[in-house]
View 1: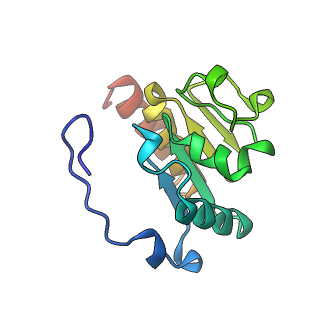
View 2 (view 1 turned 30 degrees about the horizontal axis):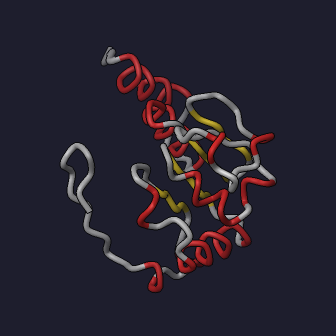
Length: 146
């Protein structure tokens, strides 16, 4: 898969090979969702991960995959997609924010990629303490490395 910016991603597992017990975090990247939308294998995997209370994160258009599973019927979310044309979304739970965290569900608009990464980092406990988190915010969000 090659991103809009030209980054090449080579998966090391197929959806069928994912062992849900080995997953702590499952991120669905944004972009054009049509290639995966409605894919039974993805829907099945997302439901299994959700049932095991794993952290699920999606950015840009990717929250549509969570909507398709019904996960977003119980959680607040955001997305870059226009909701008016999409029946899969529970529009009542939409929040017009860069990033939304609701329990183990993280969703972000495309422009919220830094906030998305920060929230994923917090959820996965990668920061040593508040100072470490703030240093990361200052550097990546405000371009200040002091």
